[in-house]
Length: 514
Image 1 (cartoon, rainbow, N blue to C red):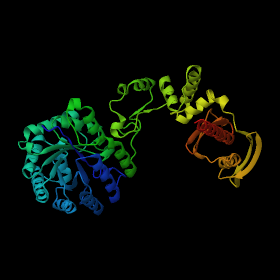
Image 2: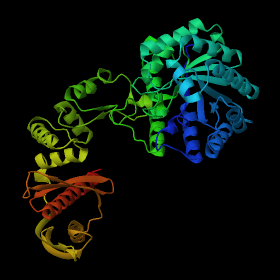
Image 3: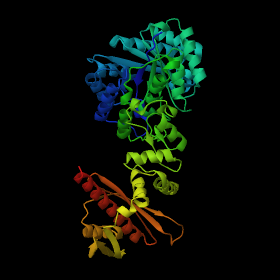
Image 4: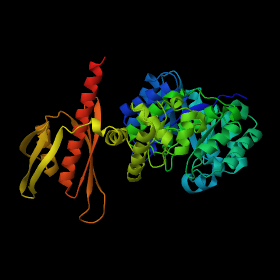
């Protein structure tokens, strides 16, 4: 049997049916180009009959996108089949995908058809589609809840009518991997002409089993998987393209199956679809989540630094992510901390390393994640403090503010040993204070981040302010604490400006030594 699994991407059709994920024609074109670059075999571009926008998207994608087969969905109705053909005709590689349900619960309550009537319509519409195109796919909707003997009967009839792909949908995500795999095997064993068609599967994720069911299906002879980028789709979504593709790639030793997907494009396409649809990828999402290749545990970080294979079964580069991330937090160990220090240019040993690591652990208990600027601030405070004299020092700060008063800050500072004073208004007391400080120091830096944290409880709590500043290629962190949050804010800003001045001085000295 062929060991190639075709990847049928339905992000632009089923994925778009996620609430709020609707895309216009231009957005669909952008995604379609990315899917072609990714190397999927089939793009289901939309449901041509459903709207003028979908019709135009199917038409343009079919005529402008090269590489994949371009498919339009169509109900088992003549007007749907005709609309699909009108959108596809004239393009080189096209498919019509038609469907009708085969489960008794759907036929009775939704379609109001008998089994015989549903089978007759399926055959007629496959024949109609086959009159337009050579490549016809048929789906017996809700197949996993259909009576097996009737399901086999319908499949045999539509293959005789010209269907080249038989897609078995787990429409409501009801199947288990064992039962769905067995269903695929039973179809192969009980449909006499199944050898004339490719078996496809379309699994929904209502029980979180869409990917597992898809893998069970190909393990039992299916050779096409219908899936979406990031697993988006109706209700809980579809089988995730990135998951099924990377399972087949990573566990080829067991499954012996391949795809034609360029896996290094997976992460870029994931981010593209997320940005266009507005559906964010959860951090712990397999393959493409922010945490998929991020490690915080000290044991894991230590192993990873020694050998990538200790805690990574695939390389981040293989899916288009530049590298793994060692997240510095309260679970990180000395090995990871020292490794990050070296990346930042600090080779600490002995007592210096001990002091810096102890300070890091204390900080990590307060913060969810410790950033590079935090690490640099620790080193500068604990190890390099004597080398970093303060250019700027706060002497006095008075602020006037209120509901009917323009906020004004009067700041007195010492700059390079000289006392200076400025009085400036602003949008708020902190803004006014920062404008006065900026005027005194002449800084050209940009404020990237401003955050306030209460160190203790109660109305008299001491507040800690953290700021992040950038000037040219320098990014620094500044911190200040005080029971008056405006004073704490000024101290944090001045602390950052002193660090920035030190970095600039250090850079000049390094350049002069070249």
